Image (spheres, rainbow, N blue to C red):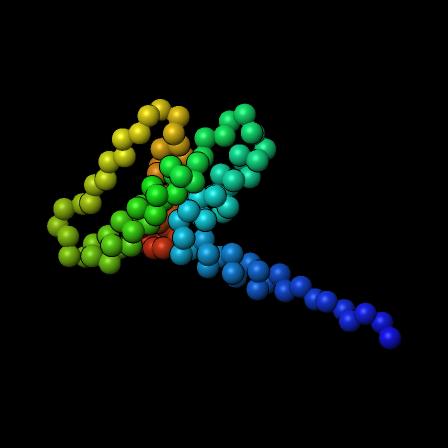
Length: 110
């Protein structure tokens, strides 16, 4: 009797990854946007720290979800300010990854 053939459902894995990144900004920034692979390739340029950056990502995610829910009621645009030292990844996380993630949540954002 031969071994049973194991099949691997790549479509299910892709859908799981897609849902994870759509619902969790930290996962999106690390894996879909590519911060984690970049850090693995360039250990000398390692700036991402879960202790520092994950709370920021969680706060940004909460802020985005609240804004998306209530934006039709607001007359003034929502403004946020991140004050961190140079080299802490503000541009990468907030100006690049966060903007892309917001467009995943609502493709009609401009």
